[in-house]
Image (spheres, rainbow, N blue to C red):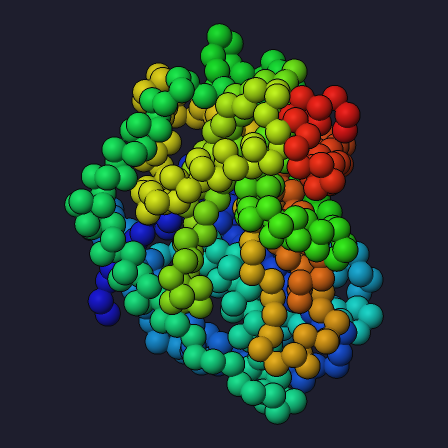
Amino acid sequence: MEQYPITAAQRLHLVTLQNACEKQVLNICVSLFIHLDVDFDALARAVRRAVERDDSVRVRFTCGKDGTARQYIVPADDRPVRHVDLSRMTESEAMLELHRWSRQPFEPRWDAPLFEIVTVAMPDGWNGAFVRIDHMLSDSCAMIVLLCDVVELYAAEVFGTKPPADRAPYLASLQRDLERAADPVRTARDLAFWKEQAERAGEPLYTDIRGPGHTASGARWAHNEKHDLTVGQRTFILESAPAERLLEFCEEQNISMTNLLLMGLRTYLSKQNDGEPDISVRNYVSRRVPRIARKAGGTRIHCFPCRTVMPADTSFIEGVRQIAAVQNQVYRHTDFDTLEADRLRRERWGAPADALYESIALTYQPFPMRMQDDHLNQIEYRSIWHDNGTAVQPLYLTVMHRPLGTGMDFYFKYQAAWYSLEEVEKLYYYLMRILFAAVEDPEITIGELIRTV
């Protein structure tokens, strides 16, 4: 089978794995249940058909003689789909079992499957599937596309709905990424940009959600936690009406939800750090602008710092537009290797390999789970994202639309050695106050927001 290099996005995950003590660190785990009786034999057939249609989940990684990781795609096989009946358990017992599955690493990793889909009967009439997949194969967008495919394939057989459209091939998307990465003109341009970013405005300043005093002695950076990676997690649900109001505000102001959230988070960090104007937040970018990439599966995550310096008299909406200007520059250079961009910054300022300049990382997932047949959108769904039991950065916020777009989930995953649940709850509380105060008065200044929320 033909082998291909791994992409920069995959290398980011591989290095994370190599530096992690807990080898389940790359697990992405989600369960999707419907409040209906399910034909589990038909659901298993739908799972197998979805795997046949999605070459990204059939990727295997291998280690060459020179130690370089490469990837290849295997044909679909006839592996049985495991079924587990948890319906006789209590809800809490069943959830604990799913959480236990989410903490199981893939062993072995080389030349072996890195995903599993289990059909599950849950208590109280909920039925569906649990997915555990390695981050080198998938990101959250690819996971949503895979789940929708399973549901639509199942419905086509059981309910006679229209089958889903063909999936876009991962291989074509991979080859496109590798060609772009090999383009010397593009690579040189990206390298020049990230070198300039490392120099611009001097050394960044680490700001913590707990307030000042958490940098290394005499430094502007903080040491990343390397020993206690115990995870904490909390999901807050923003109901449909307020979520729609935020989306309407973005449309009215011609701004993106990502930039609105970044502005809200940086305002909170400024509030917590005595009005500090120099704030950095790490933003995760899922590079899925080409149409083929949206349906192709795979992992396309890169992450880069969003640094802004805003005085207190900056209006909130002007702050969002400043973030947009920064992000528009960054988006032109997101094919660059995240690890190399971070190395350039640390090298410029003499910071060690474990140095942090951001306490918060953000992912906004703009694609809600939505079926092409509207009858399927009327079914009562429940989705749960399960943590993998380890956290490699202080706080990671994923904001995603709930199934069928009924509100938004704010999923916080954080290092319990750094933050308490109360501190995370406080962050969410003030983030909502900041955002909705700005919705009511976009011209309110950062200083006024800090004083009044």
